[in-house]
Every structure is written in C-alpha cells, then in structure tokens.
Image 1 (cartoon, helix red, strand yellow):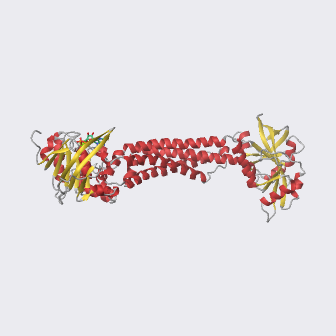
Image 2 (cartoon, rainbow over the protein chains, first blue to last red):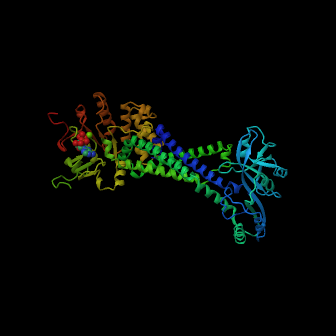
Length: 378
Length: 243
Ligand SMILES: Nc1ncnc2c1ncn2[C@@H]1O[C@H](COP(=O)(O)OP(=O)(O)O)[C@@H](O)[C@H]1O
Ligand SMILES: [Mg+2]
C-alpha cells in the first residue's frame, strides 16, 4: 500500500513539486537565517577569537567587551604580572581612530596595539606578510576586511601609506582575522606605535592579556587576579560569551531573525498545509474506495504518513543543501568569512519540518478518516 | 432487532438480511429510508435491486456489503454477522469476501490499469509485481489486456469501467456488488457491460448484486427485487406487470 501511496503523491507532479518547494523553502529560510544569526552574534566575540594566545583577559571592572572597554592605568600590567599562576601578561590596546585613505576617503578604524616584544594579540595567521613585519617603524597590518574595503580589487595594500590621526602608517601585512560584528576595519600595530597613533588620554591600557602557568586553570587564575588586583578578569570563554551576549542584548538582531525564522515556519505551514489538503481532497474518493475495498484506517494513516514523510525528507534535504550552497557561494564575501552551519541549526529546522508535516498530516488524516466508505456509492 | 415474524436465515444464503431499517438525520427531522427489509441473496445468480431514484437501493446494498451500519436489523454474509465484527475485522472481511464496482470508478489516477485492478491483492499484502501479473490475466479476459500499462486518464470511459470490474473480481470475492453500472452508458454499451458482468462475475459460489433503475437491462436478471420507498414490493424472476 505504501507503493500506492507514494505513486499517488509523485503522480500528481504539480502538487508534489509544490509540497517539495514548500518544505525546501521553509527549511532554507529557517536554516539559512539561523546560520547567519548564530555566526553574526558570534562576531561579538571576534575580538577574543582574534587573540588566540590569551587565556585570561584582564580589564577595568566597568569594561564589558573587547569593543566596550575603559582604559586602566599602565601600572595594572605589573600588578597582574605579580599574581601567582600568571605565566605571562602583555598589554593590549584597543581604540578608535580615523584614517584618510589614498583615495582621500575618511574611514573609522579600530587600532589594536599588540605586545611590542612578543606580538601577542595578533590573529593566529597573516593573509599576507609575516608577523615580524610589524617590528618595522610605523608598520601596521590591515585586516582582510580593510584590505578589500580600502583598496580596489587587484591592488595590493602592501606598501600603501595611510594617514592615521595625522600620523603616517605604512601597511606591511594583511592579517587573517574574523571580522567584527560591525565589520569595522582593523589596523594591528605594536603597542608603542598604537600609543602614538591614538591621541592620548592619561590611561591607555585597554586590556592585559594573560597566559597561565602549567597546572593552573584559567578560571582559577582569573579569580586570583580579581581578588588580588581589584580588576576584572575573565577567561577566554567567558569573555567571548560576554561579547555575544552584548550583541544579543543591544541589537534588534534576535528579534529580526526570530521573526524571519517564524515567517519561514508560517510560510511552510501555509504552503505545505494548503497543497497537502488539496492533494488529499483530490484523492478523497480514492481513499474512500480503498476504505470500502478493505484498507484499514491504520494502513490509511500509514499511507498519508509515508506521503508526508517522503515530501519532508526530500524537501528538507533540498533546503539544507540550498543553505550549504548559499554559505559556500558567499564564502568569498568578507561578511560571510568563517561562516559555518552549527549542527544544532539543521536539527532545529528538521524539528520545524516535522512539526509542519505533523500539523498538515494530522489535518489530512482527519479528513480521510472522517470519509465514510459508504460515500463511494454516492 | 429482528422481527419475530421474519423467517430464519437459510444456511445456504450468501446474504441474509433481517429487519433492516436505516434512518438519516436531515436537519431537525429523522427520515426513515429503509423500513424493515427481510431478504436473502443467493449465490450463483445475478440479483437486481431496482426502484425509483431515492427508493433506498444504494442504502440497502451499502448495508448488505458492510460499509453502512443499519439503524436496526442484522446482516449475515456467508454466515458471519458482519455488524457484530470489530471495525478492523469488518474491513478485513470486506477485503477477503467482497468486490465493489463503484458508479464513479474511483481509479487511482497515477497508477496504471494493471496496478489499479490489482489494488485488493496489494491491500492483502501481495507484492506489487505479482499482483499486477494476476490482474493482467483478468484484464485479458475483459479484452483490455493491451491497455494494462496505461494510466486511467489514457483510457476511454468504457475501458476504465472494465478496469473497475477487474478490480472487483481480481481477488475472487464471494460477493460482488455493483451500483448503477449502466447509468452513464448508452443502451448498446449498457447491454455489453451487463453481458460481460454475467460472463465474468457470475459463478456458482458467488453472489452478485446489481443496483439499477435502468429498465433496458431488466431482462438480463436472474432475480429482481423492487424497492419502493424503502420497502420491498416485488421479488421474482421478472418485473411485475406495469413496468
Ligand atoms: N448520508 C445520507 N444522509 C441523509 N440522507 C441520505 C443519505 N444517504 C441517503 N439519503 C437519503 O435516503 C434516500 C434513499 O437514498 P439512496 O439509498 O441513495 O436511494 P437510491 O440509491 O435508490 O437512489 C434518499 O432520499 C436520500 O436523500
Ligand atoms: Mg443510488
């Protein structure tokens, strides 16, 4: 009977493709939007991910994220270094600055000052040039977002001069970094350079980055730093989460994406529900005939379930493949750099598809079961 | 409740209906469509149920073949009191014992003629290929063997009806019921279908009930039961005078 059920469904090409489209469209919308959402809010932690060596971030107690920070006096560095379990501690500066590009455009950039001696605070990899280029005077490394934004395609930024708050900066390398939530261009330079580039207030030290000694957990060391220095210290994971939470709490992003995901669900219910009801209504006489001939309600339910299941499986697969192709297709675009599909996302859209089909399937089954076999003689 | 005056069931009868009434709710009022029908249907002959439109013919055969519950009365089909069966038992009873020819053939549009004819076998669990082969043999007998691979919409109305007939017979049921088989046909095609049904459907151990109000084919019946307003007013080899 399942063979008949499947043939009934696929034989009606128009409705079959309509159903597939509905499920695929819903899956695509839900999966794609949730993927973008997850990746986008994770951009709130890009500052943390871009400084992979730091196991603990130390900051002024009012600082909240890598981008929302209040500078500390430079003495904080020595205080941190004296705490037990701190293997190393380096200064880290993050500030806003204005850049005049070669074309004469004005752009706001983030300047990140990394440790003069070790260059800790730089992203893991350089896209172009070696990290050591930063030891040269006035040298900066632009992130790949900036390389694309400031320079036309085909023009290498290496060797280009920038006017950075009236100071001269020379681009010597391109950092391979995860863009920030706002995709602000980032210039990496040594801490001492950064102090020159960024106009001075008395306190300039945004963060102290810490590595912990062997046998110590970052959480223990962070607690000890807080207790002994009165500063705020967070492990890498905590601070990354703080960045994500900040985006979620301070932007309309969750609501917007939530609405789109919900709409994807509603559109799915609407398209699939209507098409499936039409399909069942067109075949209600045949179902009635089957019931009269001697097909039990249990088998009828299984037939409808097989029809819904087939549409669901193929439609869902198409939707997920569509999302993968979408992410893959845009992977060259810096906005989508590093985007991945967390495994929870396809799982959630699968649940959504199952709910869509359960709702429409139950309505369909109800109408089939309600059909009196005697109706076939009418 | 069977009427105490009703004769007992004949053990040989294919169908033994006793005291059948059926009411339908029509808004506030209840309409009684059948008024205490007692009748036996015998195997080996073609029984016609005839009467004006609205006289209750369809209601009566629906009750006799186990797809419509009577308000009162009992129906034994080959000795089984079918309305005492559970729902599932009744469905399986129909599958194993009854072949249906619906007025609108209700073929499944997206499977071919052979598969449509094979539906009862497939429903019984026979593999599709095997069931189709069996159905094809019957389609040959009905002279549409060369149409076995066609979809219903590629067939003429007459060919579709033959597929529906094949579907009613493919599982060799002991009871075949057929509602208004000639209603949509002209006189000649109507006779041809009835001849065909006599040929393929009537068998010594099979009962065959045809519902019709088509007086052009009354002469082909072995027995005619006349219904008027839900009561049997005649039962005999031929129509009463005046019809
Ligand atoms: N499901 C139903 N609900 C209400 N009335 C019905 C129903 N089925 C049949 N009837 C009524 O019962 C009467 C007999 O119907 P039917 O058995 O179809 O007659 P026939 O087949 O002789 O034309 C008609 O008046 C019809 O309107
Ligand atoms: Mg009728």
